Amino acid sequence: MAEVKLEHIEKIYPNSEPTKKRKKKGDAPERKSNLKITDQGVVAVEDFNLDVADREFVVLVGPSGCGKSTTLRMVAGLESITNGTLTIGGEVMNDVAPKDRDIAMVFQNYALYPHMTVRDNLAFPLKLRKVPQAEIDQKVDEAAEILGITEYLDRRPKALSGGQRQRVAIGRAIVREPKVLLMDEPLSNLDAKLRNQMRAEIIKLRKRINTTFMYVTHDQTEAMTLGDRIVIMKDGVVQQIGTPQDVYDHPHNIFVSGFIGVPQMNYFDARLTKEGDDYKVELDGVTVDLDGEKERVLRERNVEPQDIILGCRPEHISLDKVEGQMITGLIDVSEMMGSEVHLHLDVDGKDVIVIVPSADVNRKHGAGSLDVGQHLDFTFTGDVLHLFSKVTEENLVY
Image (cartoon, rainbow, N blue to C red; front, side, top):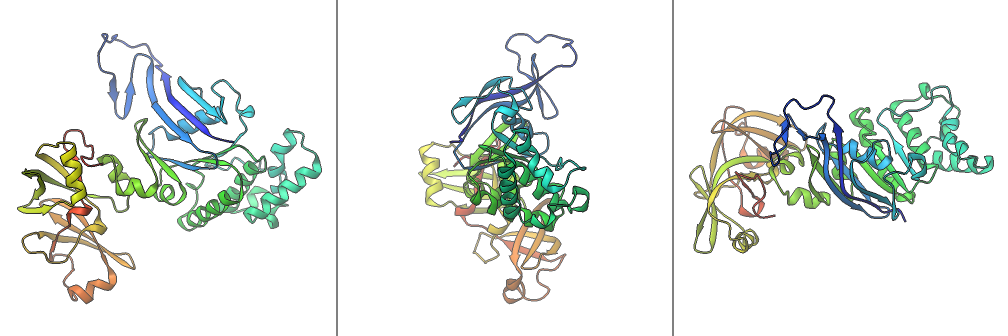
């Protein structure tokens, strides 16, 4: 079994210079840019907790510098763990050397040996373990077949494309049949078409091999398409863990709601009101009723009327006429995306994105009605809205 368990994991890089002024006991930690600085040093990963089941595919996602690669490197043993406990297959791994953890890692830059053929690159980790030659040949041939690189076995890396090199790097990792396969932004050096192809290859691969995957990326499309669960990080802190659909539908805070989804969610200044047991949202002179489930949760939590940040995804905005509930914006930009048109509206100085199916543009709205410079009325229903606290930026419902 290859469960991976991270309990209260922290990574603190010691200060390179002594602190000029010692903080008083109880003082809040200093923050410089997105870094948290304590007397111990710079906190890169803070109180990270995650249970990865056997053969599960978990993706760590977040902006550059959020601590996702550092977390993966701690699992690999390439970074020491400052605090907390890491177990793999039930065994504590904090002080175990990387070579003894039964893990394999695929890097962003392929890290192939340029003087070796593809066959020798694939065989190298097995030769280090002194595996019999017949077994090496069998495992290399199997990995090459799985990844579709059999015809390249006698070539050197310089004769391969980026996608082929990444296949070789993945093949070198899987020939060892590791308990855990770690992948650190393996597709970021590829162009868009190759990234799409390699995403599909990785999805096929995980069905054919018996291993647990931990995958790091800053690309939320990769996270949503590959992961059984995704871990969203910001400034070294986990913001939310869940299935891709759950994180998309029920973001816990404004950061998660804006990071997951393309184009990102629209935000409006609004007011949450309450009359008796009924909650409503008011903005731009329009009152929107909330669906029953949201009202039930707000009542259970006894949420007080307050100013809020109202979130709505571009694909959930409706252009259907609803008496007394229409908001008006001016079309600034119209982007033809093939099956969809992305409209950027100026609404009280804010950019609001609306997605309209191309087939509906002329059929429903008429030629020229959605051109730049035209006014456009839109609305949304209460079941697609997200209500965020202006103070904490947390979702008031989820």
